[in-house]
Image 1: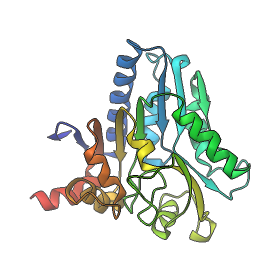
Image 2: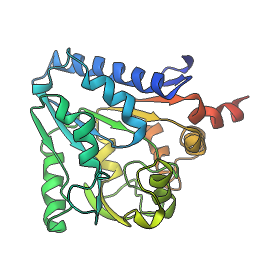
Image 3: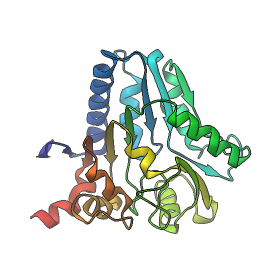
Image 4: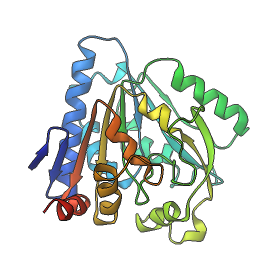
Amino acid sequence: MLDYAKNINVFSSRTEAGTAAGKAIEKHILKLQERQEVVRIIFAAAPSQDAMLEYLAQSRSIRWDKIVALHMDEYIGLPKGAQQHFSKYLEDHLFSKVGLKERFLINPHTDLDEELDRYSKLVNEGPIDMVCAGIGENGHIAFNDPPVAHFDDPETVKIVTLDEGCRQQQVNDGCFASLDQVPEKALTLTIPALMKGEKLFCIVLGAKKSEAVKNSLLGPITTECPASILATHANCEYYFDEDAYQGVLKVSS
């Protein structure tokens, strides 16, 4: 590990970064469970989260029956049961492997106005202790792409049209074979909803994210790079591999 700053952790490989993030998240959950009955966590769904979730799924120290899990976004328009659903990803990588107290999943196959209301109430019915997030190639957090991101969004969950760069990332990640297969709309937690998390863990991997990482850490706080707002959070830790962090290194050297 290369120690750059107290809250910035950089590792030589994707697996090392993800596993380190998993260990830090586990440690924080255990700390919370010493003082409170229930821990509420929002999870991202993306390949960047694979190693972190794999580590957590093997944890025998966490009291999973005291964990309430939510997730931050979901496609609109995919058929039921599609492998690309983010709820499916989280079920496969974590939720089905541990005995959660509760899991709250976004349902895009119902009346969407009712779903916005239902999921907003679930998010807001208690404090969000932790958010496990990533950063997109275009700087998005959740599906808050630059054209639709608002730092003072009054909503908790909203329907968004996905930026083409965001949709292309889903192809780059191997989730879809071509751009025309990627849905154009999604449900997402808004930036204020995510920023309400008491503790944020941000895992970002791969060279295609390096420009977004540079802009998030060194650029102005702007919705042109929505993830730049994370720098204003009092309790956000970053976990990068060297490929994702290379843009920052080039500026700093």
